[in-house]
Length: 543
Ligand SMILES: NC(=O)c1ccc[n+]([C@@H]2O[C@H](COP(=O)([O-])OP(=O)(O)OC[C@H]3O[C@@H](n4cnc5c(N)ncnc54)[C@H](O)[C@@H]3O)[C@@H](O)[C@H]2O)c1
Ligand SMILES: N[C@@H](CCC=O)C(=O)O
Image (cartoon, rainbow, N blue to C red; front, side, top):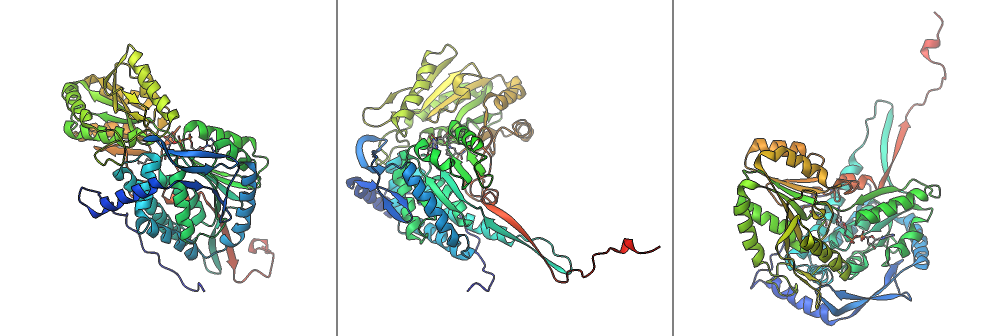
């Protein structure tokens, strides 16, 4: 069947639809939103390809209208974990031996379903479940997810092609095996694309995965799972197990067959999972691979030669798009005194224009934050700033949870470069600005480098090339994704491989070859054509 080398076409990034007034796509998306809102669905676990309902359920509601129910999710625990792990290990027997082109074709088909017939469902479910605007949804639930699937397939074929040198008389080969056991994929609420990628990347490499989606975004994750099934993913290869963290996590991590953790989420959760794996290390048949991408305290650092007008737009998009709930969102900013008065005036004038509300109203730039817990946490930071002597709120600061979890885009000005909101991840629409004396440029860069434990994204702004060089050098370890004269968000697969270091994670760059290597275990094979017939060596001869 596979007596040929198969070529795999290098993909291109999925182009985005714009949803401008009068466009056909805008009309279709609005209709799909209306249809989905009228339905109330049940979200079961999917184990061995079958829907599994449990005796514990939870309502799924919309962040921007928390009294509107989208459905009911069935929550899993130890019993479902056991079924899922047993089924996955059984499925692995065939899946791991399937020719790569058959595996890859399934994910290519999934990408085409996402960008084709289910495009508006992907967008509408993400908008409703996670309160994203059409633009924020299109770039990730469609664009980034399809890019992950297509580019990972391409990277995988390049890895498989990479083979060692063979001198005369032998043939050296490397086989890239899937890991023995199963991968635990744990996804965050904020990106449908990340949720889809976490189980798919290892599965594409021939692994089986237990996928625990976030309950906060389970609605859109469920549709991703359905797309994968429709694309032909064999039963048991990805087991979909919604549930509260520990209910699923503890029994999974205690299983001797765990071979890897593919995690994206907050730093405390990752620390807990890492420690649990550490405590269980004697149980495992193989040392689990651990990949975890976590939080950020992402910065914009402006030099006195920065372009003020463009810097205003970068701050607004970087800090407030998707309500600041991107791990990459700008949340602290360093502005030189020399242009601060002009910058302040221009920034505040633009912030005033931002509309926050229901994402079905396409004139809104921002929706709601994901949950009551997030709302309370973010508003707590705002209240803290309101009370502080060394900070003042210069824009926003209002919040209202009567209908949805709405928080106005908020700008805090502080005189304390180590102010709480300059250091901690807030994960909401809150930008804190510290104004520095122009002649303290280099020491402020040192401050920026040392203020937060995270190192995910950062942006530097200057027209002066010498200044850019100094900034890039001093902030070398401060961000895994570094932007020059741009906002620190919206990385694109195959253009800016994404991930950070320090407390932001293992920097295994989602949607890159580096990430795929984590889900492969090399077997070196040496075949000798004429093995020796004599055990002695020439040096042993008589003088
Ligand atoms: N670096 C990145 O690429 C990246 C991307 C997106 C989000 N994030 C980060 O994710 C966080 C926001 O997402 P979140 O609020 O969903 O994060 P979270 O840590 O609260 O949850 C992430 C996932 O972990 C699960 N979980 C929690 N406890 C668990 C346990 N004991 N066992 C197993 N699973 C458990 C949750 O249910 C969820 O599915 C932010 O910190 C953000 O910066 C990072
Ligand atoms: N990759 C996304 C962020 C994902 C985290 O939430 C970006 O670059 O903005």
